[in-house]
Length: 221
Image 1: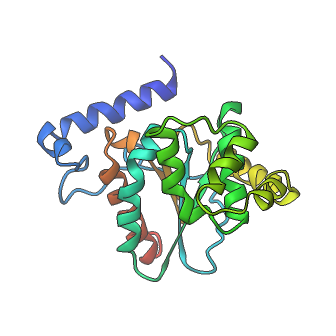
Image 2: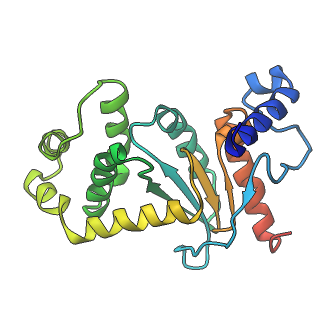
């Protein structure tokens, strides 16, 4: 049994020990008990640089075609609306496999055009509800054009050096934190948590994010 499988098994067993009623309610961590390092989150060594201009940065690593990323998206959107002004949030589209690259390039093309935020729900719906094929540039261009994005500009941006650079940056970030699955969240470049670390609880993962943000406000204590 590999170390990674063993760790995932330990996460699962601990989540089960918290009780099925708590899990059903979307609470994978025990009430009034702090999340435990090595189970609900892990420390990033070395700490990673942030791009939040002095704010507390939360980064979500995701993949458009990931069903778990699709499922957590509305929960993340609701969580973001509740955050105070000292929290900065950004999404990083990972590419842990060559098959993820088309989706990654789609995301960073939309981001370069200032359209990623408004198109995220539409891309998730296209892939997970409508079962669309968005693996090729022309099909992506047709799709985004139907939603008001300039098709010619999309194609021009798609293969631009700026988009390629963002893809490389995202891949380097994922490698630096030893990312092995999505969705996952880093908090201020110091910690990582993910639903799989909490028995699959999306809400539980965001509660750990809140806990880690509170620690950062206390100076990491």
